[in-house]
Length: 599
Image (cartoon, rainbow, N blue to C red; front, top):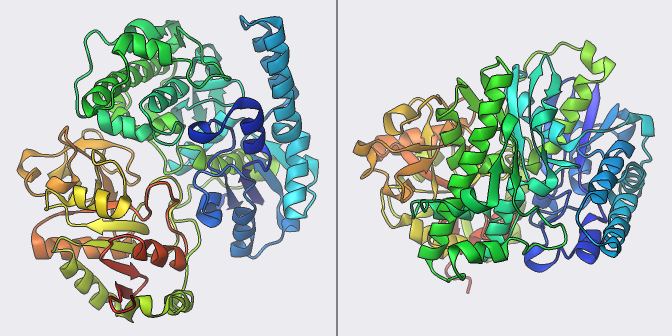
């Protein structure tokens, strides 16, 4: 059974821009962002790629035509071979009725309600509704799908299934939290034998979204909402939250069953709806790290209090002790660690596709598990890997290298020779672009499209931020560590591994002077554990580097510059290499230098 997952809308961004003001800094206040496609064959995830990696438009919401075509070409199949097409949104009649009911009870003037109704109608009829999605698919692919073979999966259920599949189809409780889905912003529930139970009494409406509040805080502090929230997380480490915390006193109300509400509901028409309240309780906005850090630490504490409140309710409603946390809020790895350690759950998984990058995967899994043909297939957990996108052989790599002519100099090395040579280069204060195998899926570089450096240099963070990434100086970098070495260097708590950079851990005192370049100001690191099974070449490099230096980690950050997607093709990698002060590029078995004589 073949299932194609597909997220993204051709007209979505345009309609949100024209009718809801999603332009400029607010351009990501839309549905369908992180567009992409996936392919599930007899329960095995064989391919997935985000559209931004192929069309080079960061966080694109466009119909994922390039991703769809690549997935089918990779598997050697045609559209006619696909049994089901899964869409991670379901704007059904019932959902529309819910939207109308909510609008009817919204305290707005009649004229304003009618205007909003008109704009919502345009959005659903022209982009998000079932008929619009079918027409969009046909127009962009040239293939008209059988409507009976298109499955519209509620957005939060797609999130839940992404986590469930990534965790090996293990019965689990779940918390889903993001900006908004069709009607809600957060759900709790459980999955048993592939069947989802939602604890509906604990659902959080879209107008009470903690994700959208966090996005508004991001915007207020001068960053781009729905993309830069991790900057708030990073800033929070520079200050202690104020006591009392204005967010907990004036923004949030906690209720029974893990519910909460915002004292000022989110206004779809006004991205600045919380600005007056923020200024009232934190003072006028100041362009200082101190002001931003103080507000960020308060927001971070609020997030932990609210999500912990939800988890306590979830613990009381289920006897399952394995937890899945998915949705955009689950990318806040500082919060993730605190949630697990303060809960009764024995373990918590946050997948490599926790944000909307993963919903094309989750929708396909949901469609497979809930179809009679899929349900009849054995549900044997498949080996899980985030390395699901395009890869390029030596022929493609060398063609790209030749295309850049005398701007670069390169030579090919054998496997062992390459590892030894790169490990020796990394003993110095250099920055290396690392391009290997199939591109990873999700928002984090996980060792196939990475920038590597030696964390023993205290100022290496400043070097990378300034010379390479062109981003804010307060931003930290994450270490990679062999899974077997991780407990020696970090206080892993209940975790034994962290393969997707979704948790932070305190660094043991004896290693703070060993890896200073990979430690945040609060003494923690966002760790990625690796193994010979998951990333054999990177593990071999780290092992050789450690033997040379006694430094058991390498810095790993995404191979891109601020505002650009992670590189995908060899040409992307070489262009990024030439446009920054990266010292060396390793692409496959090829070591590349800049040709200083080409100018």
